Image: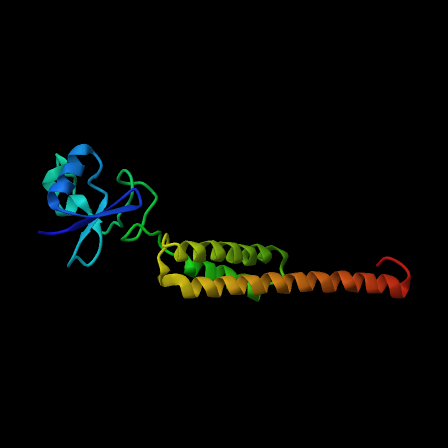
Length: 174
């Protein structure tokens, strides 16, 4: 007897047998695009790919499409197991851009974004809501963002000190 697990609305259920899964389909609890998994399967798959006859008229086969929650074609895509894909590469790029060009006033935005998004994504990875494979580059981008913000603040403080130093030495505003 094969034991099945189901990931329905980001909640994992199981183990249950095939009869229970079929019951969930008839009750409307398990839809064709909900993810299921059983021992020996390499990853979670959409229920319709394993049991195409259970869902009435067979939908067209999905090719090169990540599993989605909700109706087909929704924009919210997830990795197998219901996790969101990581954004580590983007966060690292933001951190590096903010760090390398910290003297430009607009690039502070990249440093802040790298810091905030990195912190948020690392939390999601620890909680199991995001793919943890990008944890290293996400943390690297977050650290670059923090350093970029600190360098920018030091730059601002030194400029303010320079202006006040000039005023104190010359006795007039530059």
